[in-house]
Length: 323
Image (cartoon, rainbow, N blue to C red; front, side):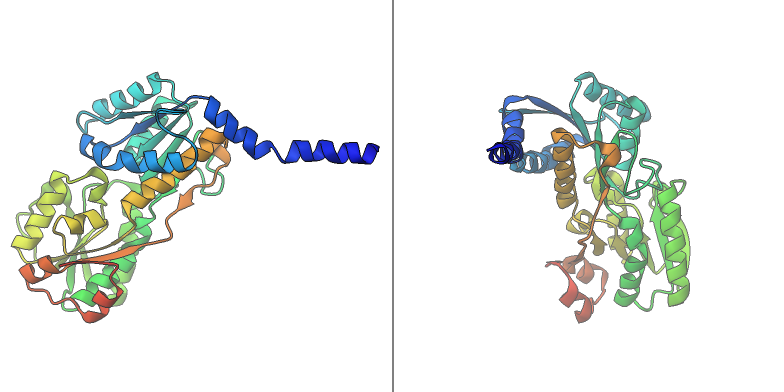
């Protein structure tokens, strides 16, 4: 009789737990703050966060409220003001996008859990101490796109083997992940017999360049259709220079080719981690997730405009071809 009672008690403790968690989610009201780089991205991307959180049982208007903020401009003061606005709402957790906004949020709070997306290398950037155990109040989803720099240069060489001088383009040469990407590109360039030079995206268009092709290091799509992205795409098309980009969005906007993760999917993966934090997982112990799927995109309209013939071998491997 005692054994039957103990078994019944054990079953009572074991079985209802998932249902009790769901019931708690349904009863409690959660508040999430989302920090995005621009108003345009807030309009375009916030739906992905809503949909993903809803799939985990956090439904806006029922048991969830989402407060979205973005800097009025890209100055430090404006970024800090947007982060303070989110924290003042006393959210249960924050979702931040981009390395800079994540750092800004961390500087503003050590108590509100932070989940990031669109961060290239959170360890090199000092956002977390390690991937397996991030420490502090922050975890998230890593793009890993700087790890793809060598692959991008290989693809550019396959596309245009005659390009023996390539300009690596960035607007953040003092950022540690960019230095990591540069060293990776240098090693690959030496193996391919390519001369690699630096070009500052903040001084675009360049007064002169004898580069045969461009290797774009920054994922400009993180900031939407930015003026920097537009200027680089315009310049490469006008000067008939082949360029490989670090985000699919640049190719959609007229860039030639890219090899990268999908920013929309990356944001959804960040929302998955956010749901775990809302359920009670501690960011310090929640491993940083990393992108495992990458897309090769080719814009054939641009290829024709600049007179580049895309090899069939590349087209067959492309995930997206823009006609």
